[in-house]
Image (cartoon, rainbow, N blue to C red; front, side):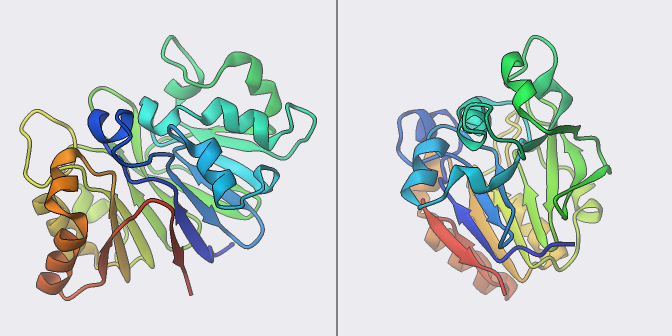
Length: 254
């Protein structure tokens, strides 16, 4: 089983305002396994921001989608074309919810499906292994009607995507992971909106106790609160290493 050596956070925007007014960058994140590279949730700008970071698209062997919302998938088709040299190169796979590749709301264009070597569908509790990288759907989230999953990527990287808080998370998510990336969209709870708040994230981190927690996917509320300050206060309160992501941030994993 491959172990990742770094993660590149391409963007930190979450929600309509910060994403689509370009208050912050979007584009998801890249997990580098010192060989295979895995791109997770390639939202708006991923194609450009990868190039800025010096990433050769042809080194990306797997794209993973947590759900179909545009801020997580806008560049998926562009990346499929780039990673396969317009279909001339093989070696790219996709792991995604069924809703991403089938039905009226599919986000992967049908004519591009033939560019992919493998397409694996996420289901709660299911694991798949591609090029020595294991992807596990930890649990299915409630998120505004979209089929959405929290993920374990390789050995020790955990991604809690967009979700309404559910106390089942406290048992479902792995304890003491090396890195936990959490979409922390709001500072305060928002009734009726299926995104996590700082208070809810604090409860989860206190239970899971990752070696490093990275908060990301910030709304305007979080942007204005200063995510660095929020992360520092959380870390001091819990006695854990917690940081706020920045656009183009690189995290080295030892």
